[in-house]
Length: 288
Length: 288
Image (tube, rainbow over all chains, first blue to last red; front, side):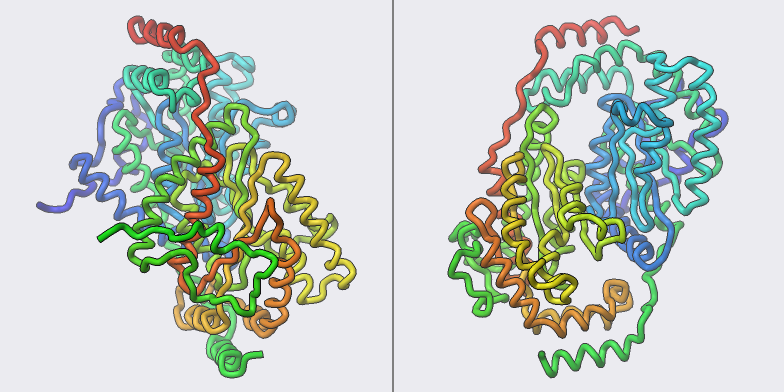
């Protein structure tokens, strides 16, 4: 049987364009992938190896004066699978090349600053793949839904975020913004699993039910995020998340293609290779 | 054929005791492991899965009020394989559970502070496995060999480090100190490989040859580290590093046994499980 593959580049199949309609979005779909789960897992493992080599090249470039980096921004409601992406997708590359940051409820110190202050501090250094588990987008999601600031404040943030991301891009960071969209039914099932398995209790918090009860408001807030901040240079990829294997496969593919486009190459030697070989040979022939 | 396994706990086989003799140490050995490379790799993959589950339990404990953590301190000369341990051993666990810190030449800001200042800032938070790629021990290794401070300064640091580590242990962190000891010949071969493969040039720096030329002084400095800081509560595990597969297998086993001894358990629910199930069921039956 022929190997399964992507029919459409997931960056095209999942990009939120001007006509994107979140209400009509199939959260159990697998846009661009014609194959099944087994084929997807096999494909993902293969691409993971390629991603891992590309990551090492990017890291080498960063160590040799390059300024490029990648930043994966992960958004999604509880149980959407953000942690699974970190574990199963980022887990395929060298931990040394990854800079992970999680953004929870702001600390008192963070609250005293502009909401982008804590975000900016976690931007990836040259050569790294940064991963944001939640991000500045919480400041137009939970902050909006829970009315933590007035409408006139959060409504100005979309343009502010676009301008800030533009600066980040100009500094050499390629943004990959991924929203994992789980269905209401699947979220219910996943939360119930956390209440049925003692090894999952720790992942549950009573607040999760409160947040779930605000589902329509969160969907509206996400729809506005896509409408207002899916830009040409930093588009949103909206990933159906009811099939975990598909979401992981899609994010692996998006990251790998992004790295392929960056095409990092092994840095040339900054020293005289022949001279260094001779000097090293001398230490081999005549130990101290 | 019977499955290969450890004949001796590597924490016993590799611990630097009072009689440890670095000059007589076989850097191509495989203490405690009677099997071969294939058996070792198979065993390591299996133990990696167990380590990964134990890591998740420790993480859950840390998220639920526990204060325990683990810190893997990695020391070794250039090419000893520190990066390979991070990639191949730590790469087996969830990146979210690992906090990695590399200590290179101190920055101007770091130099203005006590040498433990930058180290302390990188200690793992509760629930995490911290990894130090080089560490405060450089302050009695390269600092001593290159005479960056006078003897009377570095010679006082061994006791200071022991006292500091004691405090770290009392705060809930289990220290796992690993020194990867490569032979002079093997180091020469590995450095030469970096000069023969263009994809490895970036890992080489002309200073590596200078450091290698001080081999005897570094061996003496390492011997003193083991003699002065291999304490009952924070012993050094001296790992032969000429066989990369053995070093990775040994570190995996040491970490896994350390985690087994900590025996982290899934935290109990801090809420009424039945009540939460009912509340969740209500959101399933009657969506907002």
